[in-house]
Amino acid sequence: MAPAGTDREGTATGRLFTAVVAGLICGILAVVLSIGAGSLLFSLTLDTHLAATVGMALAATAVISLVVGLTSSIPGAVAPVQEVPVIGLTAVVVAVQSAMPEGASHDATFVTVVVAVVLSTLVAGIVAAGLGLVRGGAIVRFVPYPVVGGFLAGTGWLIVLGGFGLVFGHTPGVDDIGRLQNFSFATNLGLTLLFVVLLATIEARATSSLVLPGAILITLLTFNLVVVTTAIDPASLHDNGWLVRVSMDGNLWPPIALGDLAVVEWQAVALAMIAMPTMVFMTVLSQLMNDTGIELETRADIDLDRELRTNGAANLLAGVIGGMPGFPSVSLTLLARRLGATSRLVGVLVAAVAVGALLLGSTVLDLIPTFLLGGMLIWIGGGLLVQWLFASYRRLDRWEYLVIVLIFGVIVGVGFAQGIFLGLVAAVILFVIQ
Image 1 (cartoon, rainbow, N blue to C red):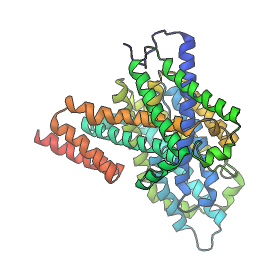
Image 2: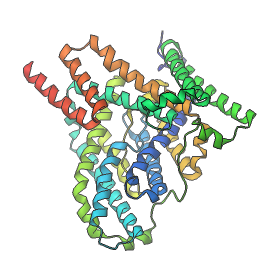
Image 3: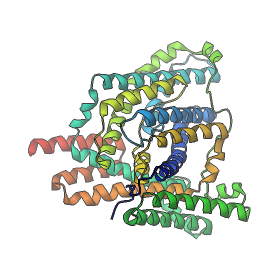
C-alpha cells in the first residue's frame, strides 16, 4: 500500500490540486504563527505598537516564504518568521530602550527600536549567506544523531502544545478541565481530536496523495457552509473559540516612514548591538537544526550551504522591507510533505496568503476553524513524538535512546535551548565512553 505522500496517479492536475491545498493551509498556519511570533517582539515593552510588529512579521513571512520556496533545495519548503530569532531580538529591543537618552519620546524610542531590529535582521542574513559561501553548513553535521532526534521529539511536543493552544485560546493547563462542561468548547475539542484521527487514518490507509488534501478541503467547505446556512455571527464564533482571535487593528505596514529616520537615536542603536551576536547565533543555529531535522524526517539529502545562502538572501530582503528573520519551519514543511506537496508553488501560495493577511487583516483567518488548524498541528507534532520517543527505541542503542529522552525531558520541563545544550554534553560524554 502506497503512503499518502506519494502521487500514484502522477497527473499534473492532481499535483496542482495537492500543491494548492497544501499551500493555502500552510499559508494560514504560517500567518497564525507569524502573528504569534511577531507579537512577542514588543509584548514586554512597546505593546501599544503590536499592530506594527505583526505587520513586520507578516511582511517578512511573505518575502522569506517566496524566496525560500523558489530557491531552496527542500521541495515544498515553508519558511515563516520564527520565534527563536524573535526571542533573540527582544534582547536588542530592551538594550535600545535602556540606551535611549532621558526624556526621549515614545515615538522616537519606537522608531529607534525598529531600526535596530532591521539592522539585526540584515546582519543575520549576511552572516548566514557568508557561512553558505564558505561552506560552513557542514558544522551541523557534527551534531550527534541522538541530539537531532531529541530536538525533533521536543519540537513535536511544542507543536502539539501549539495545536491545543489554538483550540484552547492559550497554553493548556489543569484549569481547563472545568471548561469541558461548556458544550461549545467540548464540541470544538472533540472535533479537533476526531480530525486528528481522520488525518492519521487517511495517512496510513490512503493510496492516493489526493485523499488527504481533499479531506481537508471538504472539511473546510463544510464548516463554512454550516456557518453561512445557519447565519452564525463571526463575533460569536470568535468568542467561543471556533475561529482564531488575533488583534490586527491599526497600521500593519510599513512600521515607520522614511521621514521618521530623522528621530533615530543612532547612539542607542550602536550600544544595543552588543545584544545582536546572540540573536544572529540563535538564528543561524536554529535554521541549521531545522534543516537537519527536515532532512532526517524526509530522508532526502539537503544542501545545507545552499540553504544558508538562500535563507541569508531571504533575510536580507526581509530586513530591507522592515521585517525580522525567518527560515524553514519543521512543522509546516513536513505538513506540506505529508499532504503530498513537493512543489515550489507551496512557498509562493504561503507568501500570497501572508500578503492577503497583511492587506485584509483577520478576514483571511475567519474562514478557517480552529479545530482544523489545531488538528493538523497535533497530527504533525504527534507523528514526531511517536517517531522519536517510541519507534526509535528499537533501532537505536539504549544509551543513545536515553539521550533522546533526556533532551525531550529537559525541553518539556526547563526549556528548548537548555535541552539541546544538555543533549550535546551527554552525547559527547557517550561518544568518549564508547
